[in-house]
Structure formats: structure tokens, C-alpha cells
Picture 1 (tube, rainbow, N blue to C red):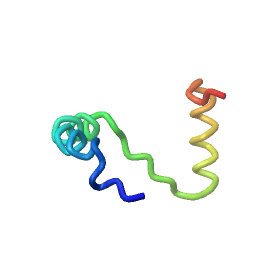
Picture 2: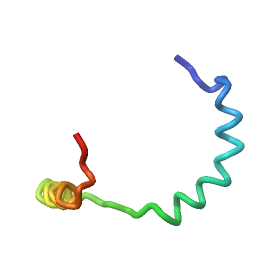
Picture 3: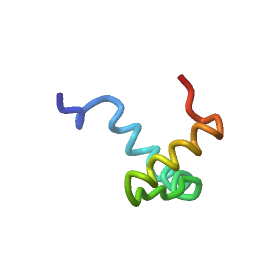
Length: 53
């Protein structure tokens, strides 16, 4: 389904310049080096209580 002409497209384009700078400021890069690194990050994420079932 092509959503380029969806009703929310105009809203998204309008809000993007306002929201993107906030996201860029608060989001951090989380590079994955290898599978062991990914598992350690996931375990830390779970220990911090961020993973909810």
C-alpha cells in the first residue's frame, strides 16, 4: 500500500522540522560492534528494567 498520499503525510511533514531536532538532541547512537557486544547491551537493558514483557 502506498502511503505517500495518506492524510497523515502532510501532518508528518509539518511536524518533522520541530520534532527532528529534539530527537537528534536526545537520541544517542547505539552502534553494534559484534554479537557479543549486542548481547551485553541487551543484558544491561534488561538489568536496568527497560525490557517489559
